Length: 166
Image (tube, rainbow, N blue to C red; front, side):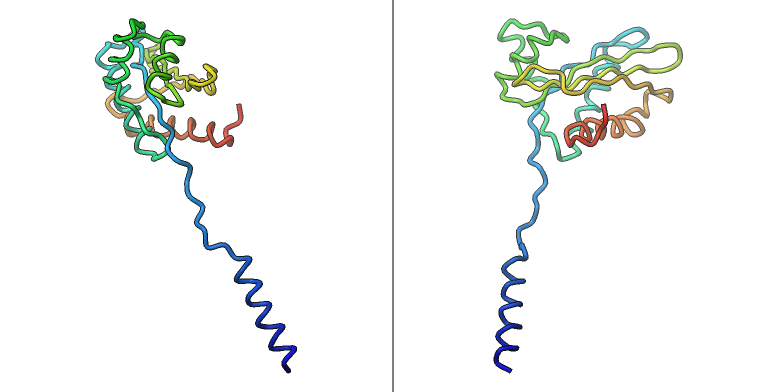
């Protein structure tokens, strides 16, 4: 009888010891910055800026990214005499100054009746383009923030998680 009770108690204690009460926490947000999307054929600079703002909000809203304000990025670019364009070297240098891990750059324009969005995610430490893709969007530009950009951002997250096949 005692042996059976001792066996039950030790089994319970073993199970309690093996079970983990630690919660698996989500990955900490990645500090990033976004260069203004370049406007290409059929796009006004102001429209490209608006899409950049919506892209920034979509990234921030995932909880996976903390986005450094573009005003801060532009101030660093200007202060250091860098080009406030898609110049990859200058973007990476500015990213290092701001201590961001990722930089996003790209363009948006019209090709026929479709919007074409070209985006790159650059690892600041290695200066390597980690993910680049071209998307097309054929709905109203006014709806791009709700219908299109959240899906696009999810692809960047999948690329970070290694679940997106290249």
